[in-house]
Length: 272
Image (cartoon, rainbow, N blue to C red; front, side, top):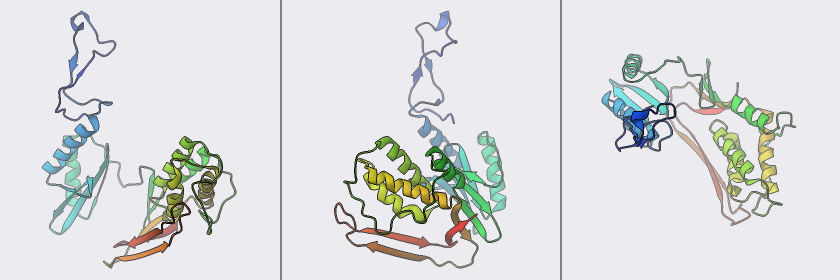
């Protein structure tokens, strides 16, 4: 992760390395070190140049994803700091990419993807299942809700949350809980709407808002293993659904809209 520095950066002599010859002197860095503001940018720039040198292109919508087309086949690589996922339908190119990465960086092939950034991946006859079971259970354990009574819905059907919902609560705790729920709905679209409602009040949370968060946690207790299943199929159709509840917000009378897109693979909620 030590990228190449463009700027001149100096640092003091590290403790234990000082001698009579280093008195009044500093070190000039040749590579970025962990903790520097430039480190993430320098590392990714080095990685990007290496991938482009291998014939890959960046996706404009997400610069951390690279792809290469060859003879009707495609190979893709996604990177998060120093963790990489390689996928595609060109097995020869995937093998060559691993060899080239090994020459450029110190890498380790961990085999088929099973766990990445809190998301568990399972493969079966029907397709691929993504879930965050471990993440959800850890969240329930940390909040003391592991033994709570499960709820059947993530939010009351006739909820009426507003800015004035009781006494103020700990804002840091509220923001931390909602932030973790926001990451959880990557594989749990069933809690998407409920989380979007409680996230409206992160600046000034009240008791009623915290109660709504606990309702979501109780719902997770009901089925923490739920996730998305990407089924095998041969169609190329895209289906979209949308809905809205007009002027439902109790604060500004604005509408809330929702949508769901099902693409090539298709998805649905599933239990592992």
